[in-house]
Image 1 (cartoon, rainbow, N blue to C red):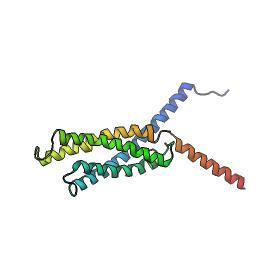
Image 2 (cartoon, rainbow, N blue to C red):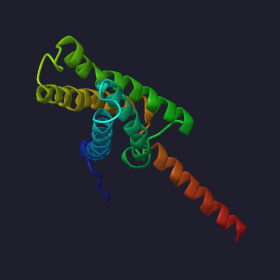
Image 3 (cartoon, rainbow, N blue to C red):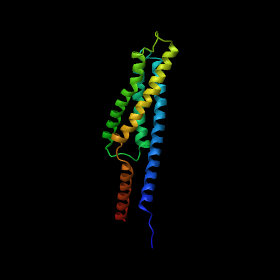
Image 4 (spheres, rainbow, N blue to C red):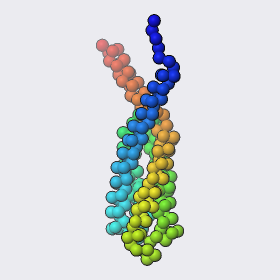
Length: 183
């Protein structure tokens, strides 16, 4: 007599696999985010300390947009490579829309720091201004924007888990069936 596992055991195993997949996806999302953060940091300070000295929030906005394009490529190809459910152009448009909202969220803390709390020269020292800019823009703003991105990507941009695995499997099956018929 063939014994099968109790359904609760199977359900627990499936849930464990889903949690592992979600953790892996979150780790990849965080890795892409860390790489984009490094690009944002380098671009932001490169602009802020040269051509946009008088426009620190603009420098951060430009740096964030550059990093967003970079992040889309890595997110689609690696972090969310198994998720999908949309045509590429629609997916890219949604990715950039989610990121436009995230950029707005990201810019709120440095705008408040600079223009509401007046943490800028001559009100405070240059060092205090730069620390306030880093904490408000690069840490608080990035954390808030990243939390929104994680939710938005999974909700709207890459909504269907396993969509690319299924389509890749179907195309392999179609190729196999085609090669069998051609024999």
